Length: 196
Image 1 (cartoon, one colour):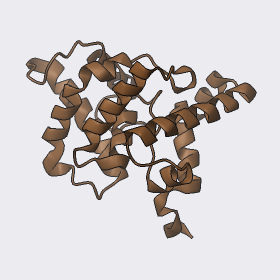
Image 2 (image 1 turned 120 degrees about the vertical axis):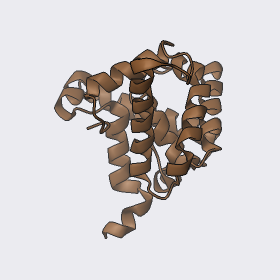
Image 3 (image 1 turned 90 degrees about the vertical axis):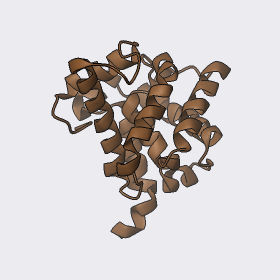
Image 4 (image 1 turned 30 degrees about the horizontal axis):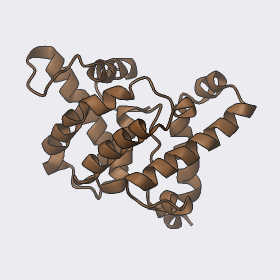
């Protein structure tokens, strides 16, 4: 499952989508809407924490939430974007670099940043770790991440020339960025040597 939380996957997606549409304008929101949204952000941050237990998220969770909220407009631009047809215009590249650089300055660093970005838009952002970005010859910075995303888009376009997207999604219950991440993780992850 994409995220583990008290709500269903559909509820989580709706709340994150509503956030990206601007229905949650700031951190200071009263009532149930804030509780639901705060729960979703907690779930996305916990998603990152579970992936990489070395990142000291616990004591930094509120700061990470604050940073995510400061990037609301940037994430909103990408709310309907999919990796396979994403347009790497200079404007889009600059926005992704801003998101990446801002998040990477927190305790998330490079790997946690891409995981959080994926949690915010699992149809666009592909996750990585050291083994993966090293394999693709990318530096662990925003410019390297743009290069990585462009490479992943080409891989995904190649797959879609041979397979139907809807059948892939239906058969696996995963987004295309998640599927490519799972392939990369199996073949190139940093911790791969632990399993030999």
